[in-house]
Amino acid sequence: MSVSNRAELVAGYADGVPVRELATRFNVHRGTVREIAREAGLAARRPELPDAIRQDAAQLYAGGMTLAQVAARLGVSHEAVRSAVIACGGTIRTGGRRRVGA
View (spheres, helix red, strand yellow):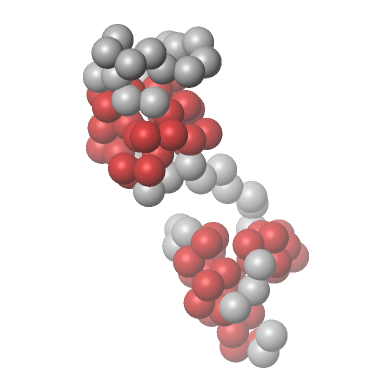
């Protein structure tokens, strides 16, 4: 990767551009983005959903959707939905096959 591309990637990471977007833009793996950022002295960041999406996720889940359904609707991982539900004071339902008509 050229020095100018590396600098642009680091600047994007520092500005909060999602790692996945940077990886796509520079045609590298997400781990490479994090490694370049770390080598540049930037602290690792934990991806966080915006408050509005977090609230939507919690409401959709509380309304009966599964973690996977909420994740698919919002375009995020089911782990992100799970974290959002818990952060908003919700609880995760027990797993298992959903009953038809229930």
